[in-house]
Image (tube, rainbow, N blue to C red):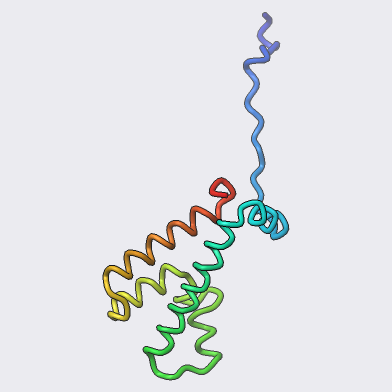
Length: 116
């Protein structure tokens, strides 16, 4: 074989471009896996309850300040941050803390397409 000729086996594998899953695709996946959808909804309810617990434990906050803390890029916008803060301020005991972390891991696994 000449130097400028390439064998088929010399070709580089084609890269598959990964793209974020769309909302429609996500809903379709959840509809195919109702149990996973139920678990995600339940986890969302737990996270909302944990946020309410944290809000109850602090001084009254304006809606604006609460949104800055709990929404978007706020320091307590993530479930994991809410779990940690609730635990370090003794709002939840160690057993509950562990259950929350197991739930968080479970939900994280479900939210990936491979988990569905």
